[in-house]
Amino acid sequence: MIGISKLYCGTVEPSDAIRYGRDSKQLPSHLLQFSADKKPVVVWNCTRRCNLRCVHCYSHSQDLQYSGEMSNEEAKRFIDGLGDFGVPVLLFSGGEPLLRRDLFELITYTRNKGIRAVISTNGTLISEETAARLADAGLSYVGVSLDGLKAVHDRFRGVAGSFEKALEGIRASRKAGVKVGLRFTINKDNVDDIPGIFRLLETESIPRICFYHLVYTGRAAELVDRDLDRKKARETVDLIINATADLHKRGFAAEVLTVDNHADGVHLYLRLLREKSPRAAQVLELLKMNGGNSSGVGISSVSWDGSVYPDQFWRHYAVGNVRERPFGEIWSDPGEPLLAKLRDRKAFLKGRCGRCVWRDICNGNFRVRAEAVYNDVWAEDPACYLTEEEISTRVE
Image (cartoon, rainbow, N blue to C red; front, top):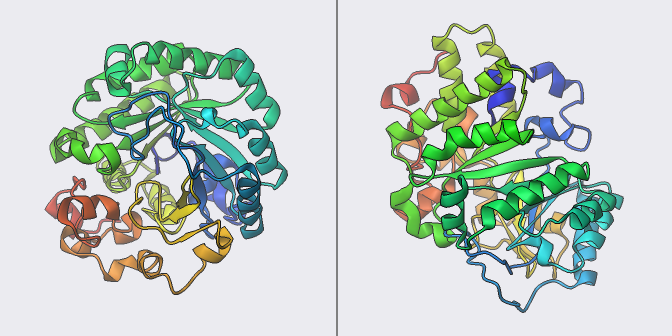
């Protein structure tokens, strides 16, 4: 996760994170990526069921009543384990989390354990009544997925009217006083909508957006050819940087982030050097605090059936199950080979990633994407768009 607004527009300084001791339990949510302890944010796919049919869904969700989901009692025991381990944030995801009947109760239970509760949703089920219930339950944040403007979004979501329903959900959340933001997965079919998405941020007063790079898992495994090539990816990140800077100059200080490609951090830093920005050194310090890709370290995923994964996309390799052992015990197990290697991955990286001089910033980028393309967890990330010169020359 690269905070474009934090880094390029100067909304965060290294001292901001240091002031809290870089302790994940003490840091405000917007500084969590700079924690030193890297206690994991846990993405819980609390249900597999979904009312939409998104073409890039990593969980292959449908509008079905799936079996095997954790019960209310099992869910509370799981959340107890997260609290005991010191997990700072639990993100309720799916499928569509609002289809889980005890969601509001579990949000409150999470908050009472000292864990921040957020949800990732398609937004179509958030009425004013639902938004008020989310606020009353103590939800910290609603992330609504919009993968383009109306025509493109509805095509991606597989259900006509999804865009308008999502907008209604965003407005209802804002009215209820729940912080809301957008999630946008970049690909060839929606990249031209990005300027319009920035206009939407401003007109709807939406304070946050995360732009996700495509990860080739689930249904998205069939979309490898719809990912941006290296030249277009670089141009798109520059477009996002420029649009963010423009918003901030005009007084709308939206929080803008890119996710799932840590080449973005190196690219942003090198751009600041070219621009002779006085912030370049501070940005490099923040990127070092960030530490790059955090799969198996600062991010984890737990499935509807209790399976624990290194991140929400790595669904073909479970490292344990919270029905059998508490989360903290699973996550701390020194005998789990994939987690051990992910936490000391630099020695295993191959190709461009293996010889890159920015490994402390990027941490080898996204391993599951390398595995999807090359059938090798430690191969180079095919979505890295840095040039050979950039990965070979360290400039500070």
